[in-house]
Length: 276
Image 1 (cartoon, one colour):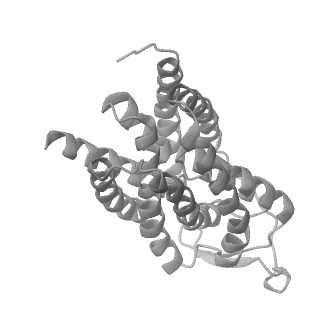
Image 2 (image 1 turned 120 degrees about the horizontal axis):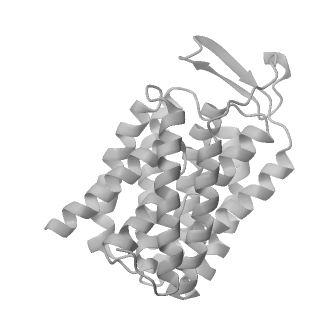
């Protein structure tokens, strides 16, 4: 019973963080399961992918209701992401535990660096509603008390990164948002809030594709997955409500430090060194 409660707590924390920063929660859930609860990494990745679907569905519902998600842009980029997720899922199911731990730890270092640097504000040029283009959109920003309009730029770059993000998602059980969000903000001209909410919408579809591969190989353990999904659903709902109230820079820095510590432990575990 204690083990089930701990799994639910891990899911809850992953759901809160994942929905608030657009990452899906897998970067928190997987190392927590493997390092502290002794869950095999293949089962942890499979559980994380199913949990990411719950995170995305719960958080995206709130974001769509607030008109923050760019549905047309999300579905356009998702065509490449799903393709990458299927490829990544096939590869991940065959890799060894040590290889997956090492790859995951290395990727998490990049995520931690991104989260730490994400605090700076990116100023976007003003866009008239008549010049939004096919994928542009607008939304009302409560913090600014004003409508924000933006035009999507460099779509081919976004599609290429989406394929890579899908591959990482299927391979490691993460949402891929740490790749999608920065490319949408820095290269495609999408405001941060719209990028996070659009990423939250996309990662659920991506995770469905990746989890199908792990499910087919019998790696989805219900004893692990069910408590994680229940916890992550509640956490994602709470996170979607808190995202407009919590100072994002503080959250990003705390999460970056936690993920960096996890990443070092994952890499050490891959070579047989335990620091618990």
